[in-house]
Image 1: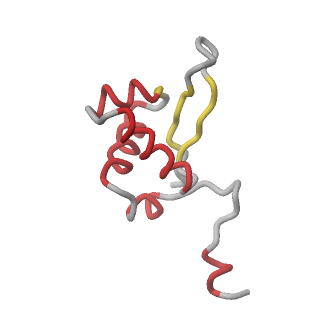
Image 2 (image 1 turned 180 degrees about the vertical axis):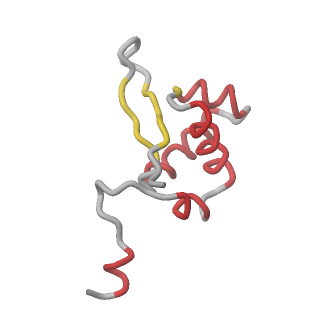
Length: 89
């Protein structure tokens, strides 16, 4: 196994706070807000962080790339997604 193979994460593996460390400040803020508030919609995150919706969407995409968030459709409104922090301790 080469060094690059050992660093590559499996798709189903959860991320860690170390994975968040090198992300942009907006992604770190969104991760911290999700840590304290558990499940939120994109609009709730935007309201809580005072970030524009586009910035929140970018931050959520970056967090998703690092496998540190979990998203699912809302039962009350299927047009919305709910986001949770899913970080290995």
